[in-house]
Image (cartoon, rainbow, N blue to C red; front, side, top):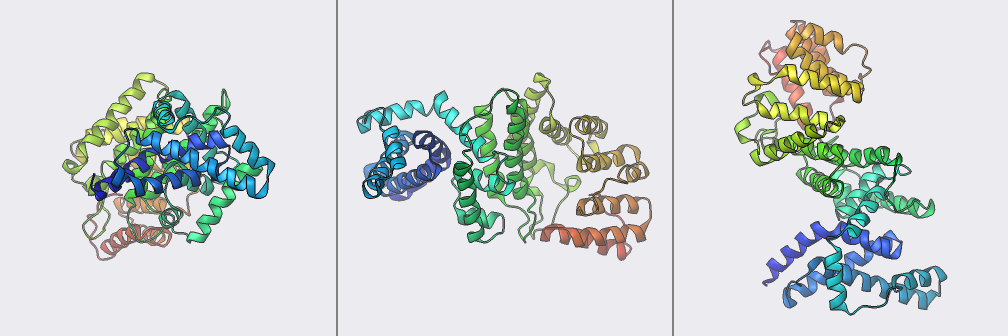
Amino acid sequence: MPEPAAEAHVARVFRQEYGRAVAVLTRIFGNIDIAEDAVQDAFTAAVQRWPSAGIPPSPAGWIITTARHRAIDRLRREAARKDKHAQAALLQASLSGGEAAPAAEELFLDELAGNDEVKDDTMRLIFTCCHPALATGAQVALTLRLLGGLTTVEIARAFLVPETTMAQRLVRAKAKIRDAKIPYRVPQGAELPERLQSVLAVIYLIFNEGYSPSSGDSPAREDLCTEAIRLGRLLSTLMPDEPEVTGLLALMLLIESRRTVRFTPDGGLVLLGSQDRTRWDSAMVAEGQELVRQCLRRNRPGPYQLQAAINAVHSDAATAAATDWGQILRLYDQLLAVSPGPVVALNRAVVLGEVAGPEAALDAIEGLGLENYYVFHAVRADFLVRLRRYAAGAAAYRTAVALAGSAAERRFLQERLLQLESGDRGQERP
């Protein structure tokens, strides 16, 4: 195989198999650092060998086998040099099943890659990365590092922090897992729903940071949205009977289907009502809607499923004018019942404004306690303008501009404010 083609294949295998390989090696050696270093070494070896030797019949098995041998070699060297009992114990544990011949072991591990044991390993790694003992930022960083294979530089760039800061965050998180003896396991029984919510929240946080960056000049970060959807698919494969997992994947797909029309060529924001719906990704829409239908058949509604259903209703409408606002309002009523909160109430008020008018909607957002949230002020400004209270609307827009995080959001709101101040009041609603 030509070298560029082989390198592209290694990159695909890396994206697909990195997290699973780290998960398997973590179980074998009981140490995330050893597992991660060994898997990285294995992929480095693949880049060096596959262009000349060819792609092995079992790429995943080759990576896991090579990583296991690299880890064993490292432990042997360290045990011989430092005579550490802990390292020797790790080595003994890794060799307890005997040293299979490389070809036979690779075939065995390739078969293993599709069975429940590797699925369980991956699940354990996901829940370890998202353990509540870790801060949210650490959970996100570890998930992207260990399951996505993103480099420290890539994660730091995505979240606009210095590389040294992100490196320290990762080191502290792994040390916390080690020192606090956080169990490498999937929670059971009554513990599972709460812990699963943490995992889903981390994946959705990654998606939202890509969809609407909290700061910086980039209007969106496609790589983070793509990675969140990949993690959502992985979790959906691992937990096919959990409707909230299905709901989250559906939600992300339906939102991401609009990505290419969310911005003008010069980076300006295009709201849902003005988007060219013929350019939405029809395959993503169809997949998201089918997943929503699966959730409805299960009849175990949860927050992610209801949000996905709301987006499915939007995607059903060929034009903004054809939107079934009454159905969306009923879904928001359900969402507010199962997941009460001021942001949900604010979003419901936007829909209420379409159903009952701006006066009722303005009354509904009073007392929500969202004075530091720019969207609250942008929504309030729209309601005020629709009620012809232009001075109050302009003041609300100024507050929204001051609080907006990204450059695209600030620019959009500044244009709204300028239109209002210039007397052009035929504005699109937020």
